[in-house]
Image: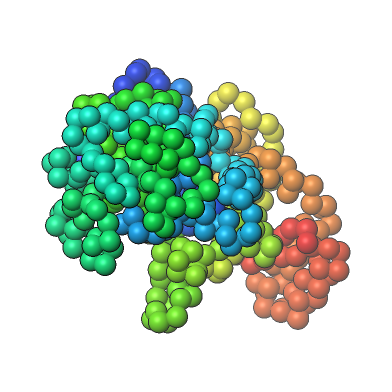
Length: 472
């Protein structure tokens, strides 16, 4: 029985889909104005684990993820510039070219991490009519109003606006900068834009379409309401994203969608926590871990990981080792430990004899089901895998069980183990000799054995679980 923490209710609930054995998921995707960083990718890995667990449990899953190519401003108070415009100015390209390039890079990253491709990847620029239709409804029922620079949603008309975040509305109003508010024709500081007009700072905006309120472009929040309901209906089962989207993005989605239709947008709201890293921004305390973000000047791309010799799946392993609702500190040391653990895991699996069959280690399979269905506890599920390999069960049963587990992990464990099997016996024996010499404290001879391994084109890393040999 799958149980999930629902941000809307603030508690773990038994998951009950709208349609038996069918699950609809909407996941907030990237704004394609720049490269995504590994903090972003942690959220997409969380989405992937959720989807894999549902498939593991026998559900047929339909996942939709937006690719934002217009309307996402650099400031939540409607005072920033469109991120796509910013990217185009930076690179001296058209907004369309920028969006196309970074979408391709994003898709390459999620493939490298074994993230299952969503069933739909819609773009807001292809769904302008759907967005305008919702805005028209909101204006007609007096939940939105036409102002000088934009059409705004009137937050005061939606009493449950802060239900998802638990934040008091007065706190949000106080957070809005006074110099921003006085320059906009909002009724309330917390009101948010549904449609921007081609006026003021947006007079020369590259992307624009006709609307009942004049030429303009949609706001960031309305796109998700339009595309999620277009492909999944309303309500749908699960909406996912990072914790930073709870307020204002997801709160705004709920307000506009529920106001326009009179129905909930989604029944379950799941949010992944931040990836933290020591700050690289001047003025911050030395060594203080902060959320990885472009604005913090502390972000790392997946390419940076690969360039340093790590496998993308080592990062996936690192993420699997922490619960999605806990903050995860990233360091190159922790990534090295994850790489070593993954390598050693593959070594242990490579030593198993036989091929997978239909029978498994029943006690471990049952325990695995319990852990992953307990709010996606991948960390405990991983520890089960290590225990399984160390117990005296038949190899064939172990292989079958690991194959089943990897449907959730997505680590290509059997494929990776097969590659490890191809390491020559001569190399394996030399590594064992070095380890024996180390334990006998004959460190000089152990160093000679390491040098010989390196001369033959292999490197050896010592891990808490034992030495790991791989080709350089």
